[in-house]
Length: 385
Image (cartoon, rainbow, N blue to C red; front, top):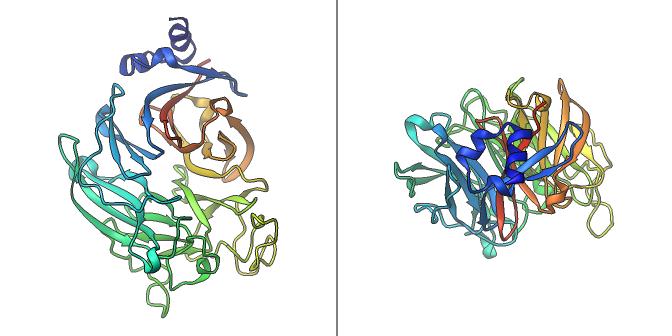
């Protein structure tokens, strides 16, 4: 009872107590530079959850689990059985069911977009695929699921699939694709490894993509030279796409993605091989003709999901960027001035859990997923002054 009262007093979260009465007493409080923050579990028992999306009108959440299940979580924290109509995924190593986003016109078309690892490659290899299906009115499954993008060729033996899905203001869909742990392919324009691609919601290629009509180049490509981008978000103030990606041993980075640009991997990197030897292809931290990282960590936190904060609920978080960290088991808060990162703080380390995804909810709270065998969806709040 004390924890519940403290939570209501410090976080002005009576709305949370109404929506999630079973979990308010389980709220944990942690210090931060801006005052105390709280993490309240919405649902637990998730099997290595990877991404969360918010259904409109406070209906609840959709959560992907890497082994292949898409789950509905109700507004009162009840976990559904796996939804029907989800494609079979290649659930090995880092592969499985990955990102989930709703169509910008979801209220009209009820389309749900999924990215996932898909098998069928030569010698049992896999690649990233993206598809969409219509969510049934009773929230029990996806109907008429269709694949709209396949990473070709399929080269992954279990690593570096990416993959985040982001719609921009004009309705184009950006997809981040890992290089399948095959470094040189990130520079090959005839392959979709190590790329950010831009397509229409139905998979068609826009005519103004930078490599349309160029012989030997895939027309879907928007940028290249990426390693394993597991975070992406649209900057709400500028409309630009920001992406984060894993470096090798060191050199995790944030990039601001521009049309047709080369982001360097593996020609330029701040990291080294896990063997402690240099990356064979690397020319150094920079390479001619490539764009350097907008922000870099020399020691890798192993970054994943990312979210800009532009809600009114917690004004101290406005113009902040939040990024999940897997290896360091933290939520990273970056203060942004224009496009410049001016300050960093590490949060939620006391949870001792790998943070896979972070999203700003329509209610102004942050939501994070922990990538564990008993994964949890948390609602995160900042103490109100």
